[in-house]
Image (cartoon, rainbow, N blue to C red; front, side, top):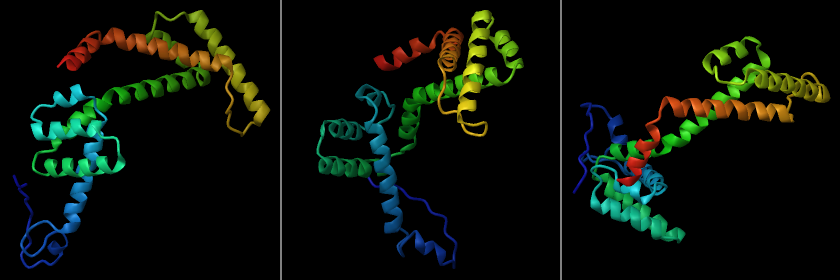
Length: 211
């Protein structure tokens, strides 16, 4: 099966020859870039577990078999050749569903990173802004207010001591125990709130794994 290529032609224009030869087929440069992109996609698919690959709707059996074979190959040269083969297979199919599957697989990691950044922002705000405490308690009323105030107060002391030791204008690289404990408290509370807000997420993930 040969891929169908579509190009917009500008009659009388010469710049089109950069991407096509005189027969209207893609140039070698364009084909090389396409193959490079598809092999990179093949590497990303290889990072997915076998059961997730098998769950991709519409994946040709030949491509699935090639990807499963790739997981069993250990030599660098063997993997390179297999990725070339995988790229050739993907030239004849719509690769967009494969890219969407990769993005979906990576999403849990993106969520975890976002959660860490959110916890860091709350920690910094609680230390720097008095009003942040009121906002936090409004959003998370189950928090032990006295314990949180103590952590904030001690974290501020740690931060001030570190700044004094390194100089007022120097970044505070060394953080005290309260600073770390405050972050862990915030992260745990946010994680519990997220789990309570989306109780079906774990079931959905399990269903995906069982397919």
